[in-house]
Length: 111
Length: 115
Image (cartoon, rainbow over all chains, first blue to last red):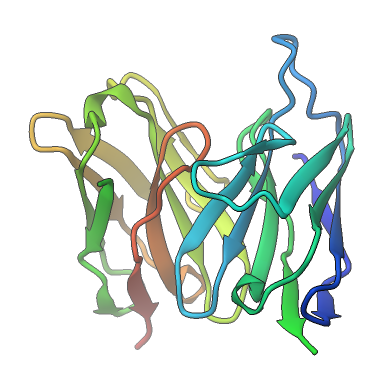
């Protein structure tokens, strides 16, 4: 089974400042079709998860451009260029190259 | 707009059964694989099961294999999760979600397994 490890597990950020979350997989997420099956989701307090980024770096429809994803192979990063109050919640990475596995989640709050 | 609405949750005794339903609208349901994902109280997300768009393939997490069955009715735009032999550790909010990217999620339905 592929294990997804996120760091840090919690993050307190001043509004307007950047934030970064790391996600490492126990196996490469690069498929033979050339795609890398790594996703990022945000679960805001009391809400369902919502898709932010798919296939490492593609923003889903309606996602602000302050969110960006990068990485390759087994190491990935979600960056928020300038954190806003509405960005609080728990961020999850997920792989889908071999079944589906989520990271433990990173809780982001505002200082 | 895309809507996924789960129902069927509740309180059930260990060993009993429960069937969850997810009603889909706003997209061509029969084009997309569908998943169930659960979240135990205060915990992270756990993938549970997937069914291909035409129902031809189904896969399950090891934690539910042999006890849960995923199914769908494309004529009714409905997704189901039959849960048998329920255990305390199955207590969670169950979400349905759509497609390869888990693009859209329902609001979830709470299942509590307790005597």
